[in-house]
Length: 172
Ligand code: RP5
Image (cartoon, rainbow, N blue to C red; front, side, top):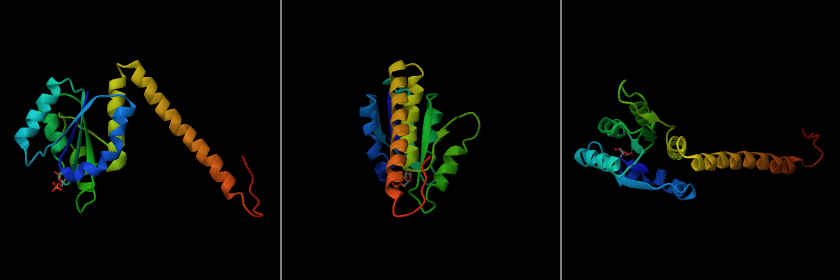
């Protein structure tokens, strides 16, 4: 259902920790490394093959002059989410601007730079699928609820910890 393409093996460390989200949400995914400038023809075949296999959203990670998401979007009308990777000396600002500044007509959604961007790209792809999948929508709601509970728990625990000595701490 979700296709992932990395511009280079050097981008792998940014997504490794989040691949478990596919298991957690029970969403099938496929994965390839393909470069827009080193393997342009293979990139096109991969996109076409993803379309044939029923992929609904493509997530593309790319750093530096990050043209991969735009090139992918040139081959398909499927939603493409580009994640700027901070792999260059410009720490992802180059990739962010390259991905976000797509000329009008060939849309590419853009996330934050790096790991937060990768995590959100995956969750956003689930959100797209959830518009036609009630059970997935419920899972996303539960995922948000767990984050809310964690913040409340963190606040309570931290409050207890900092109430030390004779400080005039007051609880809300
Ligand atoms: C981009 O250039 C890749 O997405 C990677 O982030 C960056 C550097 O690639 P390598 O030279 O490490 O393969 O194409």
